[in-house]
Image: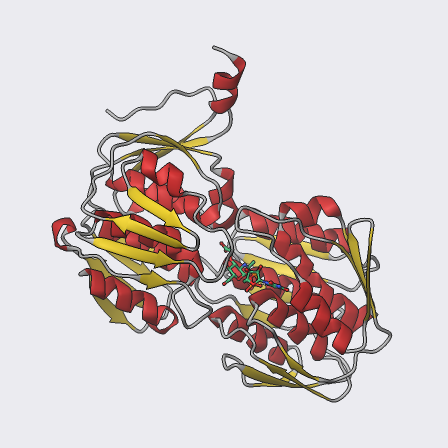
Length: 435
Ligand code: EPZ
């Protein structure tokens, strides 16, 4: 076998045998996009904080490495994580860790607040776009920090942050979180306007309040923080992952099956569920679970535009595009959050989709049927979307670069098998085809 063919076949892969209706219940894990920030927030107090319902995924393991690099002691067993930050003495997030996971930059706010200093490698771009951090840095500077960059690092120094009234240029999730965590120990009342309203922000505020912070307005566009003298360690349970929930709901709908996701409140997915209903998916809501069912031939096209919460989540855009490819009619999907989040379209076309990208719009011609093929996962959510397409395809789909999926989905193939999917994880050498 020539080297490039061998190289292409290298690495763990998922082989999905399509054409089966999914049926059953999935319990979602704790939200990746909350857990990572709660871990960073534990740096705000000495002693040991305890987090429950933490997903055992690659990004959490990377954030554990970041905390241990700073000198924290982390124990993570069966979804419960204890973070002892008493011995933290470094304030540096190295290039290798930031490059592996951009969310490493979320330690900036807590380190500057507690120690007056942070030196963080600047995150590079990624498949989704340049991923700037100008809103984070401008906010910290307005709070009195000295911000300077050199040798690919950004250094933030502030003996004492001061309370200010800040208006974010854009409701950035990460900037809201970094500035929130910086403000809790700043002298006076900080008002943050035009902040992100995601449920993960609310979860972070709950944890910060349990650590002794004085915060109101979580979940609204304006959050007020009355600075306190010190924070104390606390215990918290991570909320359910709404993006994982949406991913499995679309998998159920795209196979014409009936899938229930448990451990999630429907209200965090309001607009998404409304769009599923517009497509023709039956959606049944309970206080802590959501069930979907539908007939593949009955789905119809709808337009979707991603927006900051409570708009349609950009992290469910790729998965939705798979469902729209199966619905009758033409849908327009508009990506308003990231500069380049259609990178997976070419892979989806290889499975049988008909999509034309024009700037931040994707015109999806529906009524398609998929046939299995070898595809590569360009990023986390696109990888999950390609798996869904494989579940709906005739024949075998081989997903490569599945490490992207492992960053954010806990026991992904195990959960899919629990609802009837025929999916196997294969090491490099194994062959894999459907019976
Ligand atoms: C968080 O990323 C999530 N990641 C992303 O999920 C999610 O897609 C995103 O929020 C939007 O909901 C985590 O929470 C770890 P942003 P974040 O700051 O904080 C621009 C997944 O699959 N921007 O709201 O990086 C930026 O370039 C991941 O789980 C600036 O211009 O998102 C982007 O276009 C993918 N300057 C837009 O804002 C800044 O200083 C949204 O970014 C900051 C952001």
